[in-house]
Length: 203
Image (cartoon, rainbow, N blue to C red; front, side, top):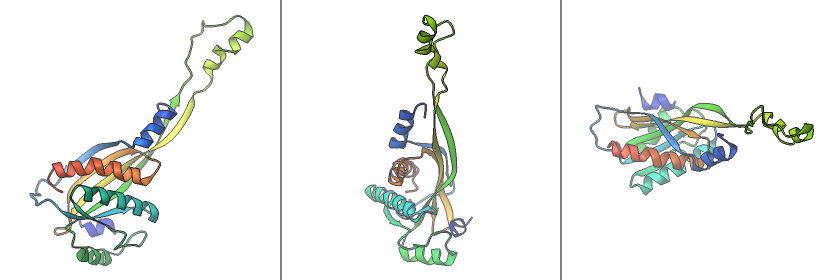
């Protein structure tokens, strides 16, 4: 497959904590067993997004982290500023002028809505205070429906392509609780995945 064709709450506080920290869970990783190197050293970072702002923020943060780790990185929005699908010949020309030997593409492939339920403690049928008012002031409320909080879990696909061969070198699927800003998402994902790619000798 050508790189050009592909591109053409347990409780509320817990949910907020997960969102703020944005931990990344890597689900599946594949590395081309036939790839013997060398490690790619100059990559274009590309985010597939309908939002131009989110794309730019994601690419900036991921590219900055790569550079901190000693990998030369460029954002794609400077060379390919269009929103939506881009013509293959334009992508090819931009990548050729960039001098990069790889492109790192991230896209959201699934969004799952989850619910967390925070129930009130159930005291048992025998726990009654004397009289109606004693009962109403305590046990009656143990049967009140729980608080329900909804949040999103994103499944992302991150793929490293070799521009010389046009083939996939490395790809991973990961999950993350949707953070409150894209920069946190990009930073968390970069910290997790760049370490994996370097350990497997593709970066």
